[in-house]
Image 1 (tube, rainbow, N blue to C red):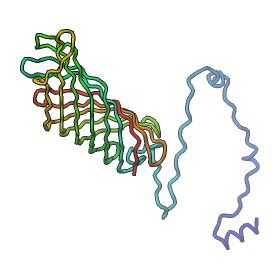
Image 2 (image 1 turned 180 degrees about the vertical axis):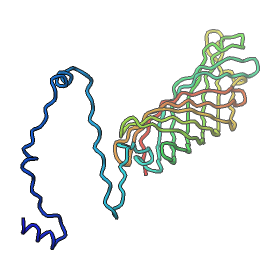
Image 3 (image 1 turned 180 degrees about the horizontal axis):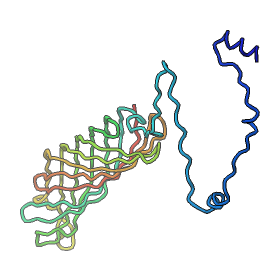
Image 4 (image 1 turned 45 degrees about the vertical axis):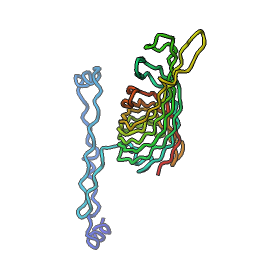
Length: 267
């Protein structure tokens, strides 16, 4: 005890204190029988109160703990600011109308093909794009109205499309996302129609009704689909696009349903 007193005077600390024997041997009061019976009754589980956080020592910076446990990265953070996506597609037109002189009826669309390339810029989960594409498909009607003889009209359509638009991306998994876009643009649309009439059981071409016309038209489109990022810089896309074109001379406006496949780069 004397040594502890000297050391405390030299170091400025508190000396060792003895515990009173009478205090250490003081009996602990037990709970009454009534309190013990009450404690044994069933009841709701009571969560322990959180331990108080001690105040930081003077001079130390205060550290705040964030309540956010996980923040999902945006499409821009995951894939990059820009992308370039070549696309191939399979368009199917619904119907278009052809009218020339006495001929006036609808043409049914058939499968065709398309090719294009899209370049875009990302902001978080938003994106803007510029698209250049070419579409080709065919129309047909073996019982065209407007002539006394049975008439067969076969038509083709080509369009060179330049469009811009914007869209939004939603991540489903770290690698898989879905997207939706809206776009407007211009297209050089070229249509042709070959007309044949059945005379005496033989199909004969009628050059007087044949037509080949082209003009600059407006386009509008809506697309949606899935995009899979199979590496840090490359991704694949499977999507559907509804493309509308305004009328071209004797040919009425048309809609095209396109199934598109693409593999592109992110940077």
